[in-house]
Image (cartoon, rainbow, N blue to C red; front, side, top):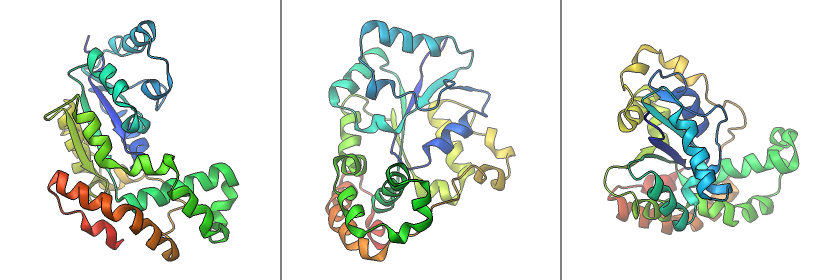
Length: 245
């Protein structure tokens, strides 16, 4: 049995739920019945717990088996070492999104959670101060600190095991994005070619996508400009366009 062969580790608010839904349609891929199991970021990592976690993938008849939980991107290095100890050949998927937009999407999700779903319909009535506080919270900052996440995971999974993907590429060509993800994890990359673009896009969340409030852009740029500059150097990719959102 193939057992666990891949993990989707994040980032949060980068269409990981959509990717989970799409991969469930692929005959080569097995995923747990429950989306986002949150094993590595919430469970006590005892030997028995890890064995039970592993057995669910060993029971799958498919050659490519895994799960996607965006919270894994920010787990502690000790947890990543535990993942590597038990599954050293894992393929990892990590999706990057403009961190300003990611932070805004994350905050809007919490508007719905903490202020009620109806608040999204009156988003303009949520004060700037609430958003600014959320942008500066550890839960938001850690998820938008892509460089730290990548460095932590690459310390244990070097080389090509960790593949980086861009959210903007998904929005531009979901078929090509899925093909690249499948190629990385070992599933047939041609499978999604038979699906029309409209069918691949139909699973996108279509509500609550208001543009970033202009009055909040200076705060977001101040937070993320140094991180974007550093990440650009680290990846040797020009990401300055993220600041022009």
